[in-house]
Amino acid sequence: MSDDPRIAARGSQIAARGPNEPRATSHEERLLSVDHLTTGFDIGGRFVPAVIDVSFHVAAGETLCLVGESGSGKSVTALSIMRLVQPPGRIAQGRVAFNGRDLRSLGEREMQHVRGAEIGLIFQEPMTALNPVFTIGNQIEETLRVHGRATRRSAKQKAVELLDLVSIPEPQKRVRDYPHQLSGGLRQRALIAMSLACEPALVIADEPTTALDVTIQAQILELLRDLQRRMGLALLLITHDLGVVAEMADRVAVMYAGRIVEQTDARTLFADPRHPYTRGLLASIPGGEPGSRLRAIQGTVPPLGSLPPGCSFEPRCPDRFEPCPAAHPGDTLVGGSERHTTKCYLYSRAVEPDVRPEEGRA
Image 1 (tube, rainbow, N blue to C red):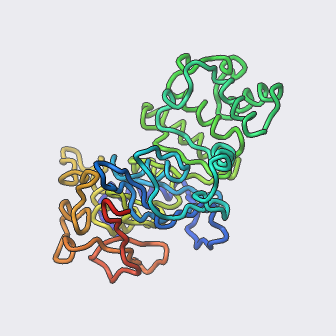
Image 2 (cartoon, rainbow, N blue to C red):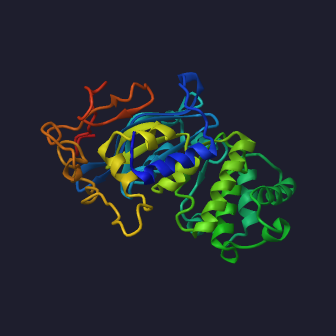
């Protein structure tokens, strides 16, 4: 149990909002399953991995937060799920199953029907995700028509209803506005409306509040929670903000240098973090005693193609010891829970070996 008051405060925040109780999830209940995913880039004649042997699942109706510093591989993971990684990037290995189908085996035309209709994607910056030369209404209507969810006539009314659903004021007027005529918060709401137009079962939200001020961030998070309750959405929320994790997560996967280094339910993560990187992240939360110095994790995330031979966190880890520089640890069950795993030699032997793609050979 952590005795850091900042971590305890986040734990109290989770308790106050009343998250879903952690529960075992059978394979039949898993809406999305990512198994041993490795994605990277062909650079200078060699394969440089950005996502390494990543495995997680999302059940229907739950929120999984994928958290980590910039450059840890979170967004590449999301793009891999949607098969939107552009050359020289490519998925080298792994399986991505959605509703029992392997998305990697689908043809591009089939995958186009999955994107938007079955899996929605909310991008980090709506100004780049929205087309500046079409009205908000035109873009929502096109989404509905492409996926056969509305006729040309009914799509116009449906677009107004979707803007009203995400609490955009005067939706009949705003539907005719161009993206530049909306504030940042309204643009993000319009993007959420577009991602929900076809009533997908899963929404992937990639840093949906990063470019917004604090008050608007809170409104967007509350909107996502409300829509999730009303529509039964599963949510894969990508963020670097532990405050967002405390507000939203049922379960959390912590990423570092392309790998998931710890995975458990949100309450356990804040109450009993095990990986040194997770503990460092939680200890860096502002809010200690007045006048106290902010804590920071020394060093930086290693760049692609320059990962250390052993544990990727070893050069920055305050707890490193003899085996850490030699090879990267595999997953270990910790805390007596089958739902709490970490990649760290501080704990018992790994339940399976780590898989590391050799650069240039994946």
